[in-house]
Image (cartoon, rainbow over all chains, first blue to last red; front, top):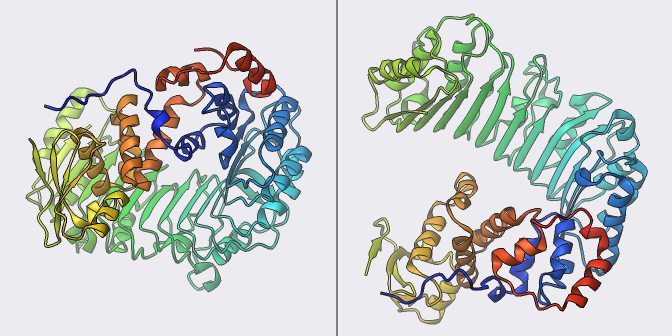
Length: 387
Length: 154
């Protein structure tokens, strides 16, 4: 047998080229990355070659110290060394002000940034209004491939063009004008967008199908995640209908669109409403390629307002595509059970059905498992598993 | 010697031989993800068994599995299974075999395990010898005082 065994006392990292160590450092907060300079003579200069900067003022009691860190890093680095990625999170340290932020962001953006993450959580409206220069600088940046913005208020959306943008995350970003109109610009001007995530964003998407302008979609979209809509807001289904992977939080019935490429769908129900079950079937009829379905809190909290009515025709995807179906926060209500039973008997290529019922009493869980195990299965290879 | 077969297909199969003699039969398109192996094939067209001298069978198996299964879900769970020792050895393997996706995944995982830890901790975890004299180190700590503020020894 071989004599080579892993010896815990060996310094293996040092056998790797500088570029790999820098690659590791690029995932660390910059403050920590700087401290690696004392590790050894070899590590001494490495942090200076890292192309990613990550600043978070969370552990800083005052903004002045935080600002000093940022300026010191920028000065220590070689002036011609680009900044490929910048993550800047601030707002919690005392004395944090938007004017310094504007200056920092503007200076950083001149160094060829491709990935930009700005997070102003914990700041208020007045602070965010002061960031208009930051917003202009960001929207002037045509090379962006990744853009993630948290807690920003746009009084005006500047002219922009993001021909290379592949990932866009917007969290609590508000447009003082017409939300739809402003956000719609992203649909038009991010032609190759592949990943979209929105949290706490307000879309007044009309259910009027004839409004062609707002029915344009991101044509290259692969993944979309829409979270934290309050009950009155709509999910902009028309914009994301080309996605292969969807994760959507729902608070009310939405107009159904056809999802031609959808293979993985995770739906989180934040409330119950009339016709929920039949709406769900109608939705599934419009997902011809769906292979993986996850239903979270399908029962919801409150009285089940509807009865499950078995549909006349089995939706195509359930019959011939669905391979995996999962229920999260399953409570065993009558309608939930009937729906699960329907899937089990109608899905001919189903491989797994997973039930997560962590909120339920253990004896009740055994009962549920038994009831479901007794249901006839349309697929011979289907495994039922309980969490 | 253990022998592992990948799924039968009409594409050409290659044998990779790990440093401890373990053999792996893989499809050509899987092997090509390892740029080092690709270069080997380009140089010697008729080769059937390629030696991988720097990587143990145990780790080569993990690498091959990664190439076959990699996707967003798999990558997110991948690193959780391995201890720091294995992560480092896998990174060495990924670097030698020149597999950029795996290298990225491992660098991220290693960084996660040392995040917000002191330089002393990082030295210990990687077994790096400190060749700075106490005076040199003190000078560096002073020069970068602004980075060392608030860093606790663990």
